Length: 419
Image (cartoon, rainbow, N blue to C red; front, side, top):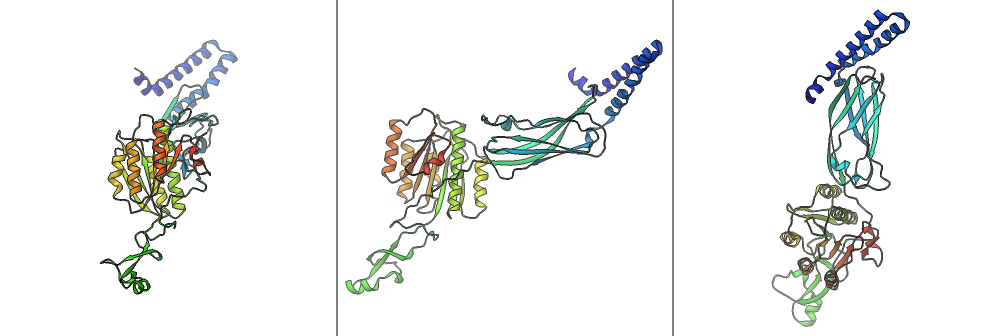
């Protein structure tokens, strides 16, 4: 019944207005006098406008959406403008326009100073052919979004005729994870002799001789130390610094955990984006391994556009898989270059994770481990503290993150970010 009434609403409304007009005419004919005829002629414009509104098509209205923010990060404000245009100057006493937003944007995280999203506006268009409506979405969450359509609604001033139309206006945009400035933090490096990494990934630095040793078959003649050979009366080969590089791989644990929630994973993606950005700006080649049911490895690169390759993936990634990440990470361990630096972000601290980090260390890899835990009154268990002490005794950096202001870990003497 409701569908039938909605389908024939315009026709029934016109019939009803005509019926009221006939009543006014009959009343004026039988009653006579100034008042009755004044009522009749006053109702005449209503009849004309109602019939004109019934014949007016909303297909004459076109809507264009303009998203004014290009590179948008989580937590920022998105500014949107709905531009309305039409070909005919038909008078519209009111126009309702509403942007059809996905649920993920309507149910975004709220803050005290964040205004309520109002993608719906009411204004009088009259004879104007162009108009616009602006609205904002504060504290926009990370993710990839598609806005499909905009609804417009109008009618006559008394509500006899009501028309609505959904206009397909498709726009896609990405909200990147929040990127924080990490101050004096630099990617970890592990070099023999205290040297910084060089850009030559697999070549010995022939200008840095660390020691000498006896000649072995296969050594290059250019590596022979002729002075020492003459003194000792045997072939002696120079020992060079180990091959160093500036490769950094960011490993993001995207698996489910019993103590984890979405806010922890959002923080983890922000840590990954911030560290990758800082590493690229410091001249390192950066790769990304996100671990879950469908793990993905982004190969190392240092080109400028590579940052957005990483950020695009971090904007789309979600928690998935009930597996322990250690086994999945080991599958990719052989694909990492020798002595690559690793930045591991996880909310797990157990024997499996410690064993994985020990494997990293045994391969000559420098490691920064961001232990991502819930904040509030939660304190580390004795079990977790023992593992942290073991890792630090191996020379690995461990940062305990229990607050959104994780950039505090780069401050001098701070290894636990708290509120």
